[in-house]
Amino acid sequence: MALLRFVPCITLAKLNNGHDLTQLIRAEYGLLVGSLMSMAGDLSLAEDALQEALAQALEQWPSRGQPKNPAAWILTVARRRLLDQFRKTKHRNADLVQQTLLNTHPTQHDDVYDNGECIPDHRLELIFTCCHPSLAPEAQIALTLKVVCGLSIGQIARAYLTSEAAMSKRIGRAKFKIKHAGIGYKVPHGAAMEQRLSSVLAVIYLIYNESYNAYEGQTLTQEDLALEAIYLAKLMHGMLPQSSVAGLLALLLLHDSRRSARSSKTQTYIPLKLQDRSLWDQNKIAEGTKLVKSALVSGQFGPYQLQAAISALHSNAQSWKSTDWLQIVGLYDVLYDIEPSPIILLNHCVALFYAGSLDQSYQKVIELEPQLRDYQPYHAAKAEMEAELGDLTAAKESYILAIGLSKNDAEKQFLARQLRGL
Image 1 (cartoon, rainbow, N blue to C red):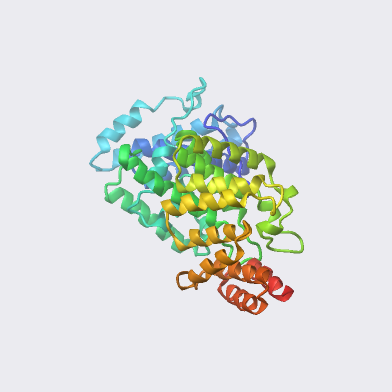
Image 2: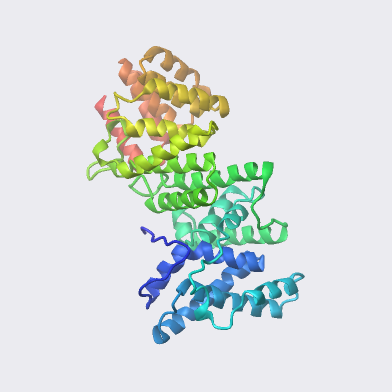
């Protein structure tokens, strides 16, 4: 599902069948829903109107031909559906919404925006609405993928290994809460912006992280979710080029630059240390590194900027041994000061180990066991250290624990190979 993305002003040379229409809507779904939501103030009504407009397009375009501006045609027809809906309803804001729709309701929809004007972009408001902190994290993720990215409920359900009925209920509950809990359709300002922005970025990061959790399959990644997360990060950075947003986008690009090297025909999982670096995407590395530099120049060292800087050091190193481990240790020190957690401390210990402080870092890892005994990467890292230090008995025990805690077949196979190698 390598997805086609278009800029807001789109005119396709040929759009005469359902497949082309699907491509158009997948590319512009968030743009169209955001514009309709800004008029209606109701997410369900906006999506319903859009679906009716799409149905009309599928019915009319094959015989009448495509309009000059397909997206604008769909938007105008959807506006008319909203107007019809509000004329029939006794909604308390019906009069206001009707007037708004009438003011933007041209007589001939084929002529809308044909003068080169772009469809108003309200996706930033849409993202902040979908990621409102009063919604549960899983609802934020599902709603963002549905209304901003335009994924179907079936696609989202498959990505998160649940049924379409369950996912439909989750999204429905989220829409209901937005409507009835007074969640404003707007971009916050000041301190509220910083608080809400962290929630939005966390949702995008969670979507990307889910691309590594293909629990039921043999592969390690789900490319679709990774691409959607990068799309959302680029969308956010284009509309809100803050340091933290640039840091997140850089982090995702740098992580994703190594995707093709994480597996091969014979190995379902290859860790960073053993990857063929010639397979890394140098364009993504260059783009991510540039973003890291611009983010750090601002002097704002948030978690995404620091993680991106660490990833940039890995991505730009010629080999595992030539990696600047001391600088990575320093970056983890700063990151731990901002977000103290045993997982960051574990990563700090691993970097310290490869910087040459073998015994010191291993002792620190031992001390982390009470906090991380159920964390698979802890036992995998500990096993690798023990093998390097020559304690094969301890390494075998740690590998067995890591295998038992792994939910991913690809990781299990790799760890089993490491165990056999001992």
